[in-house]
Length: 374
Picture 1 (cartoon, rainbow, N blue to C red):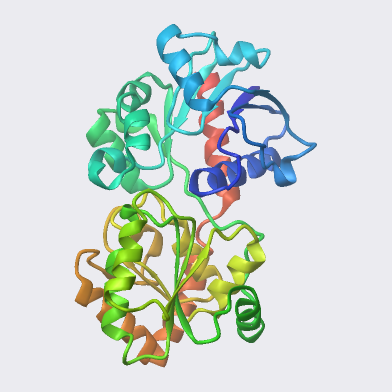
Picture 2 (tube, one colour):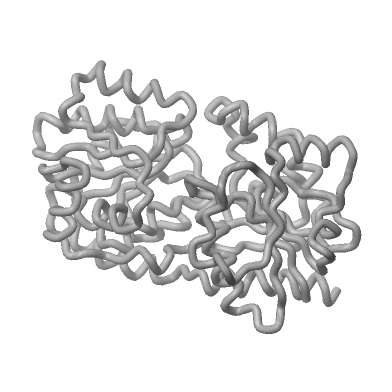
């Protein structure tokens, strides 16, 4: 079986979709047996292939990805499997389903936030994906999601039969491991100037992540606790609202912005040294940072919506993302109750171990095989 796999998301900087695709493909290659994989990439920025470099054959088309989307939408050509020299299955890993000559088609849909809450999604995302996602989901031979919550959204909002949607959970990459807390704190101090105990958030600074509410919750506690708030992630769409909130609450000296964290060792140090990971997002297709924090022994406060309860299990404190006092109260509980904190750390290790990239790869490979056999 020959499988075409869209590696276009593997471009700097690797954020949620790129990381998922990278880890999924890396483990697919490990469990593939006699299956052959060939990558397809569009776009102009350099690919970040990491461990895949030298092991994955691929074809790169130096055309902006969204320009190629427009060509495919208008002309229904060229067939992507023909560009790859033929394939039995083509896996579209980022919502958009290109035409194929004969290959069966799989599309991954990570979340439908651009439909459920378009006011919190960048028009660049909404305009590209919202118009075609219903058609793509219905035309695909199979749809993959990374949580039961997103599967439910796909069935409910896109009208796809449940038996055509398979859940392939993400997981924490093996390169991210818990570090000694003292060593981690030293690295964080040296790399980011964080010398006080701290609460951590990891993610793109954009409206859907609900960071202004987190800043307001932190503001309710700031005078009573010694902690700083560390926001680790790139600036996204409408990030200015976060900075205005910080200024309005006079928290400039207590909120630290690290920007995007490219080094896994730095990310592991942040998780391992933090006293609390706070992630009150409004909507997540999976919410990988929750599992990353748990893997590194950091207790988690997260929201009770979308996939987050499914991913967090009983290891986190769940809060209403719109309830700022409730977010602050949950954060205070973790910071002030050592017994609760340790119980959450222990449960977090156990919860994170329930997810694996090998399981994700085997589920995905099973979808491919079923399509070819059918």
